[in-house]
Amino acid sequence: KVEQNIKKVIADRIDIFIDSKEVVLYLLRTTLSDYNGLLEMIDPPYKINQLYIPISKKVTNYEQIVHDFNRGLSMIREDGTYDNIMKNRGF
Image 1: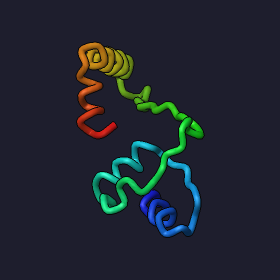
Image 2: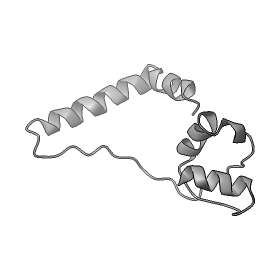
Image 3: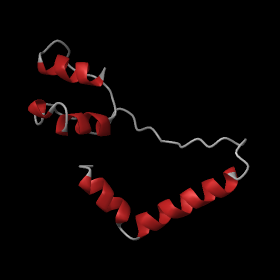
Image 4: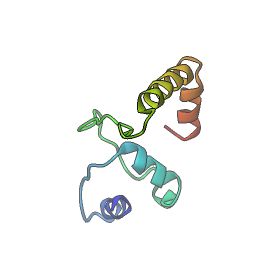
């Protein structure tokens, strides 16, 4: 669907579509690289969504998993790893 919307905008079949900026940029760098640079992103974004990673409470150690994940995420943000990953992926 995102790929179709990108192609529709380029072909002037639609004027605008709303989707994840990261997904659109990824597609423009990979499978739709011929269209890279032909779209304009609207700033500020229409909406910013928070992302969540669900972990079932049925998992016996779910609290430890959540704690370890959050701790690890904090660590890579503090030491610059997170920013390097995002930069290397084009974000």
